[in-house]
Length: 378
Ligand SMILES: Cc1cc2nc3c(=O)[nH]c(=O)nc-3n(C[C@H](O)[C@H](O)[C@H](O)COP(=O)(O)OP(=O)(O)OC[C@H]3O[C@@H](n4cnc5c(N)ncnc54)[C@H](O)[C@@H]3O)c2cc1C
Image (cartoon, rainbow, N blue to C red; front, top):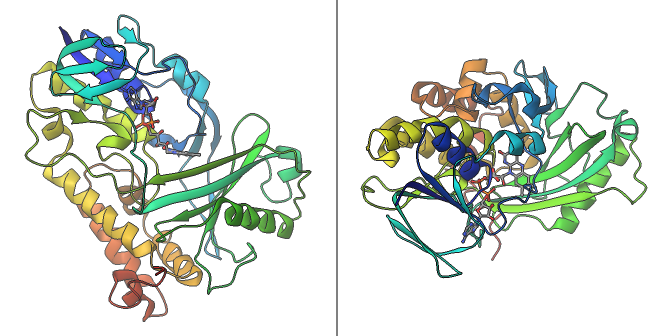
């Protein structure tokens, strides 16, 4: 009998299992490939990382990231690209029993593995990541890793472009919008990623790739065709566990409502929330209740409103809305982007963003009074 069994060793499950072992709990972990390094390149606001994560986990830090709306906005908040190998090493599982297998049946106190083993635990945590997105609101992205020297005319050393809404991607305002995310990742390359979020049906990898290449050409960056690429398509609306949850399997990480509906990020937030779950387990209280307070649920609900709003705008409207958002005080921006329970902050920034979006009539699209189904295809 273990205290905790964590199923899934992505950053969320591994981080939580690590903190459980550090707290002296008897821990079992399950993943078909527990030693495999994660595939995505993770970015986060530096202040989102918990204190117990050492600084070498940050591969690159940019003090003042840039946003184009199309005005140039400078965000006075450091942004980090994580060294995932270093993070993986930090999240040790010393003392945990590791099962390299796939869980096929998960109940509140047992986990059955494909190989037939049954693990009993006081608390079972489901950190298996997201189920397939199907037709749910999702993030689609295509990224190309370009040599930093080649990328310098667009993203000089020490800089990054978090969001670029300039219409340099070969589209017009009549096309479903996407933005560029361009960050140095710490291995001598810069990742240029075209991202489409919340648009019903999304965009194909071919279209996203075409858009990145247009932007690179427009900014004097020419590819040789040998560059590595990454792609992604995942759901943004994986909800927290329901309120009447006691006695159920506890879902954590992207699987348990920690995937941010507007940014598509969850890695740093899952690390930051781990200790709250550990405390609940130690004190034999419901971890779902400890993590998903009324305020946290309200924040999640407001972020979902944000996702719905983003998904019906044109490129020009998105640019205007983001411009309004990035003019808000930093604390309000942080409430929407990162804070788990800052209801006042997120409420203020949402109202502020709508209020300062110009021209006036675009606000009706943003709140869904007009053009509610703009990008819905029959
Ligand atoms: C290309 C790309 C770029 C991204 N960039 C960022 C970023 O910059 N910042 C960010 O925060 N997020 C980013 N994301 C989103 C990111 O994937 C998630 O935030 C993060 O990986 C979620 O972590 P997780 O541990 O909850 O789930 P996952 O990382 O999905 O991990 C789930 C784990 O569960 C295991 N598992 C699945 N089924 C079973 C089973 N039946 N039995 C046992 N184990 C199982 C899997 O093997 C896996 O190890 C990106 C995603 C992609 C695809």
